[in-house]
Image 1 (cartoon, rainbow, N blue to C red):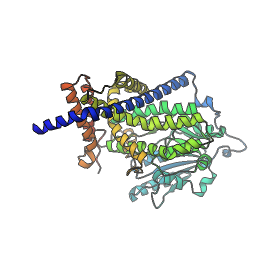
Image 2: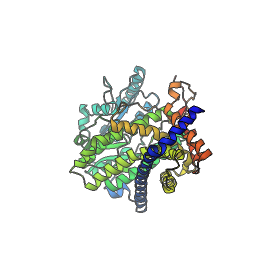
Image 3: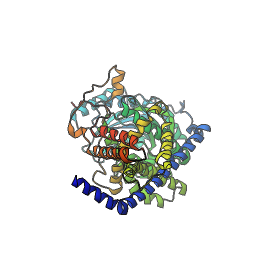
Image 4: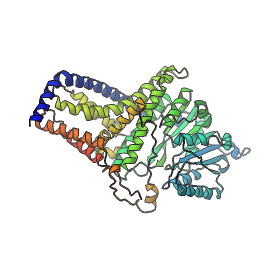
Length: 515
């Protein structure tokens, strides 16, 4: 009791002169970031309404004519297209992507399928090679390419793939990750944009998720990614002909890649890096929202954490590397530079992650312990509610899950915020690349069965100390608010702490056998 009393005395003596001023400053900073994010979301909402009302489809904004057979030229009237499929130990999905690429509707002598296999498992390499030989025996122009190292990971593989002599005859390159399955008409929808509009360097399609109903975690991911594709990509394409390349399900003009300096492995977002550099050279991008390519969401928690680390750390690191280069650029307008630096990078890739965790999981709960510091209701309730509703409209079928989405996003904000600071400070894991685990559930469902599920209890894989720590902090704040507080934050704090505890013991997503 005496020890507890001493702690209480120290707390009372330090709270007013030290804790209160620091917390007040943090509240002001968090409110400022919340307002920035709020304005950004409202702005994008207005643009999307405008786009939908005036039906500003890409085919109306740019010249688009279907490819036609030429009696005199024959198939030579079609440009030569390279299709790249980078993969790494993709035992579950390699057949899906190769089969879909070989099924694309394009003259067989005007397309080259290039499988870039970085697999380290000899058995999987053999399977992929045999699959390529099987399609080659059917008359498909497919190349199986390997290298003796994994330098640069995906960026290194794509860069190496462009060095082969047969690539010189190609004008465009379509890129599909190993779990992506384009429809046969993919090239006939995208290539005409590039053929008829010499200023366009990239055509990006939308992602369609084959396993979004796999578990609650995949539904949460669908809500976040639908907003990205329905709103963020559309806004960038419609207003500035710029957005971040998604790394797959897109077609590049090869000359745009070359002029931008080719693939670079300096960050974990080589796709975004290339897009920014190409944009600074004056190339424009177009996003085709109604062209969807099937793919798979990560359905295990560790796979999702690794993906989110890469997607949060990489943009922050790229922002640090390219901010001055963007500012000094002479080829693009001042307005476009402002959009890229402020909206695209600063608000969406940095502020959004930091304010979600720092404000809702650290500062707001701390005000329960320090009643001298108050957060205005508009900052604690109204702005977050509007931001959440604007995000949720992208996935109407999941509106009833919006509360789960808020809580899940707050949990993930811890991981994303940590990754963002690693990227900004170029700390230890800044260039860590872990390939996202894929289960191939789309194929297994087609064949009439689900992937075998077995819980695994490897403590190192399942327990996440940081999530447990934040959960304990929120639970303590909730108990304090319930006993002594007046804000009634305890309902939110208890729900949020439970979510952190669940994530902390890895009871999120699907649990699959590692054998």
